[in-house]
Length: 333
Ligand code: UT7
Image (spheres, rainbow, N blue to C red):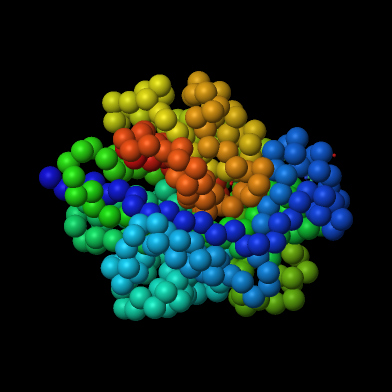
């Protein structure tokens, strides 16, 4: 039988600068009250100029490698998820590889926004199960603060997003004890791509960059917050139920649910719909805001380091975001 993939190491890295809601009040038309009431966010971290998503990923990767107790030379494949690559191309996978000194192993980039981590996990899972790779480094990192619209037009998004990175190491479980990734479930509905997107720069635009792109300000991310909110509250519980049903589990079996941290009101709604006690739901958006692909592995690393996960626990992940894309994963820890 093919061996299941287990997560043997985790790490996270948040850039040191903490930006509170009060700091945002000083640079834009918003209030701490509004942000806390609508999203549960109190503060987030911002990267300095000159620091890109690949830099956060590398810092997180070093910690994940250390926690897995392996030497970096043992890693045989890299998967990286981000919506904010350092460059239009190449992706951050190769940058992480070069910065860690791991040439010439393969480096794959995943573009699935808030669902990037679970999509990446599903890919890693297949490679491990087929025996293709034995030690995969999976990174998710986002520097979003450098391209948010802090004017009234973009304030709905600007207050929500933060920067951060996280990484995990995946290996085949040598034991036949049922631990590992049980299943992953991936979904998308591209008809809603414009409900949360960054339209420019676009390869369809000729020329890709010109004065008009800047004047029309279409290079900032835009969102139909209400529609994203509504769909997130429906799709995440559905995806969790699918993951549980696939594995003959029920909500009562779940020890920890980690939903993508988009808005604490969404996480509470997901808990309510699933009728899972809120204490079993991972939540840290108050400190980091929405870190897109990095939010789930950041929370996972915190849970691991706080001792919230015991061997054999049932861990469920779920996400919803731009695309629309959504996903879930059931893991026997
Ligand atoms: O990872 C997935 C990505 N994103 C999400 O999951 C986000 C999903 N959506 C949301 O979290 C919520 O829709 C928001 C937090 C973005 C907005 O909350 P809302 O309760 O849907 O507020 P709203 O968009 O209806 O805006 C209410 C008011 C508006 O003013 P008027 O038209 O009522 O006068 C906005 O202009 O709040 C105003 N507003 C703000 N006020 C202060 C919007 N952004 C801000 C702001 N500060 N930052």
